[in-house]
Picture 1 (cartoon, helix red, strand yellow):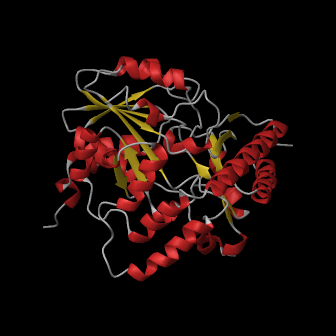
Picture 2: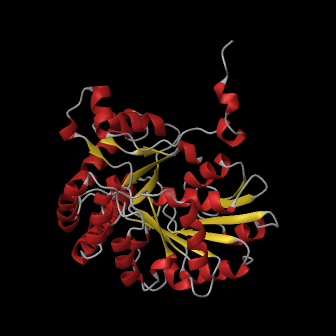
Length: 374
């Protein structure tokens, strides 16, 4: 008699659908017989500049240590982060990308008797890890595509253990000011942890936006998560981290897998923190690219959600999947976001100027082919 192994999985996992990342260049090349060198990928919010030379140099030097286990405590990277952020090394938890840290947090503080609050249209990992551990996810309806912080505060109950807030949010690019985040935190009970996901914070400029690390001293129930995958250009190496009170970090580090960040990643991340020129170029390219894309959408008469990240969600209508497929045929990969409940939108990462222009031209052709444009 055949065993139904799915029935043996824990209840939360049985109903899960795997996270769908952006389509890799090699996969599209295989599917459509395209030249990989002629494909551009604007689907996964990656840094179009390529990696920092300082990061590359450090990574090459680390290759000679591939036979050895990594530093399980990540001392050098923690020390560099501690100096940059003015926090104690005992406040930092390292992860295999920020997704890893988000999962560790959820596993540490929520269970089948708990509720986890997050926003509609928020990052897909929040409901995924919540469901995986069997907790009850509470999705609060968005307001103007972004987090309705007032409604999220009201949604907190005696069973709530975690609240996830992405600022800026992926995939909508919406952002809240420092005053709004602080007012929200004041409404949350101290026994409820707030996870402020700042994966795109390096793209924010201006005093009106919050620096979650500066809020930690006043809100001990706050955990700030960040990543090296976006503005720092190390997506392939998977390095994320959280900053919290030492007491919370101690709990997280009990569950964090040993050696969860490899030697090459630790070395590259430590080195790139010293490359301010690279970070500024990343910001400059992103600012110009967002303007280039959004001005093109205005010319085409397309609606879009103004973004504070390194991507923008553009509304192309009911034929969004058809437009997506047409773009693939042109060798341009973007991201459909039907899984986020946004079937009329496509999310487009900011590329280099020539990549953005190629996408714009391909989009115009795709819309014409779909009968959505003259």
